[in-house]
Amino acid sequence: MGFASHNSDLLLTVSEVARLLKVPKSWVYDHVRPSARPLLPHVKLGKYLRFRRQDLDDFLACQCEGAVVYESRQQ
Image 1 (cartoon, rainbow, N blue to C red):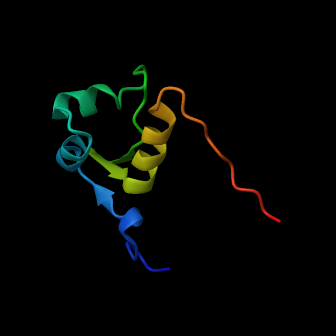
Image 2: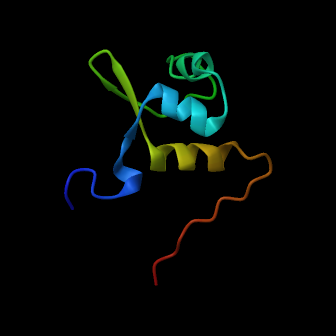
């Protein structure tokens, strides 16, 4: 699989994540600090923050109150 060959492999910027989550950019910055709860999954590339779409989808799934997480079973 090549670099960024699938949409879930693309790296998103802080602005894109804020727009996707419908929150201010300041919320995104607040939730990448090590002491933040919930901690937003991110990748630090030097001074730049980037986010993988799949990580954000997983993060959102875990944030749903009363959510049931189903694990896939291999047969």
